[in-house]
Length: 302
Image (cartoon, rainbow, N blue to C red):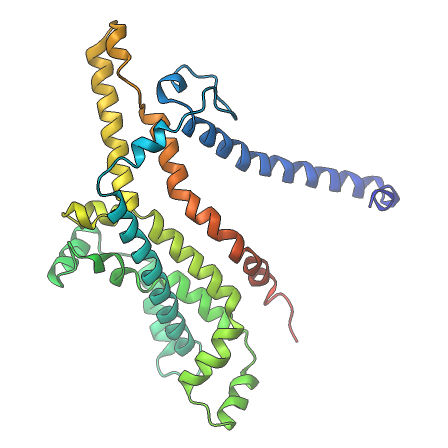
């Protein structure tokens, strides 16, 4: 590799060097902030307020994570997050793929009109208040299904899957029909197995969206027992920051009251980020290979 580099012209070598430097800078811009978050999450909050912590904790401690997991209903919140992520992702991907398979057919009556309506929903919405009134009128508020049913379909995901399906050669479907397959059998036995890259990508997008969504639990759920992990952690973080601000204002110059501020909003925030993103980081390597396949498919034509 080194000999090949010196065989290049001066302009090509300069281009490669600039590319490598840009890639290294991009990687550092992603890795270094995450290392800083990791260091602050494992450092005591009171000590972290002194500053000077960058990529390694000054004092190793688990008190931030202990605070996160002290909530009495964190087990229930975790179970709800797992349920909505698992069920919501599978249902959304399957139903969106079925709709995309129907809409990719050029023989579908009114197909262009339906696609125009779907695209219209990407540009305009009714707003939060009408949306809340709609959910309430169909009795979805304050139920676990408010996490799943309203998010079953995504116009953007549908367009992506439909575009992928259109790249599958029609001769495969024609051969299957000759063998007596109906539309559903073709979809399950031919289209879906050939579409694993796009299914994996859309599935990951859905899973990340479900797992990180705190807004739905905060605005459409009243019972604390139905709130997911992200909403619970968000509430804990806001409470910790409010308590810290109250203690700081009341303490003034009294050092003994400042000593009570053990868990700061910033350190708790970092621990919360780690708790939320850890499952996604663990799952991502298993679907990473499909991202490269998804990018390459469609770049070559027969």
